[in-house]
Image (cartoon, rainbow, N blue to C red):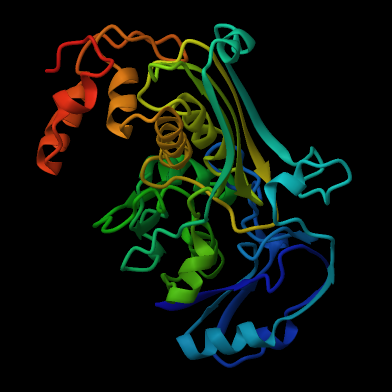
Length: 397
């Protein structure tokens, strides 16, 4: 059994001008020191765009980038080998704010540009919607990067069995896709790769991307020995994705009865240096940008933007969580401006069966929002009839 360790980039954006592994190879007990030149297949992985390097070549774009992989007889030897790897880096201009990354002249994270994804949703006539409004509220909201922080850090055991098949034991949410990514990077047929998931444990979306799998498989391939890798807590923060930070500019209009007349929103998600699930997460943010409310006139633009921050990907809620911070704050402010109870404004606009969403979806069944609101209000001790009767004609259920 060998112990594997990875050398991560110490900086967020730089060009690799020299990489010397000779001293590391001479450390007693070291069995392999691998760089990008040792990747036999496609040097990249990613569930949407396979462009996150297995081992960085020429450029590092974030502190997630792995520059070298080591296997040794002992953990101590592997860690000493990492210290003996000499890397010369020339810093490159970096960008850490997604709005700045969209500006002309911003440092380019990838040659194709910093905007990874843009989706528009249009419904009705947005200008007419604001013209019908009695009140209009506008503001910008920001949510932060969040780590999944599952209790057990990443770990993997990679070995070749007696049939020459690569067998990985790893806590992953995506074993079938792991096999595809391993096959592509290691240039092995998928039928010669087996991914075993003994237990997933905590994950929350953070185990959908590759972390140690390919490097462990590569070390096992090169040494033909079983290779075990376990992240420290610090390494775990570098290994997996984060929840997308978002910047959300909202403009919301409502009439004097609290009916929403228009919502315009621009949502920019920081997907970090690599796409991971970025386009899918921002697509979900767009679909949920108006919340569980009827809005006749809608204009939504969402963007997934590359920066040199750690990459962002799947996490509980998958893009639907962040917009709620913005659209619910807007509902409170509309209620305040109209002198209405916040519950009443939400009740006024809540989806019911037959409602049509901003994307045109007809909600045919299982629309329990008003029942849920009613139960919550009762438990809060609110008198719903008193709150809503001032202007609502619908019978409370």
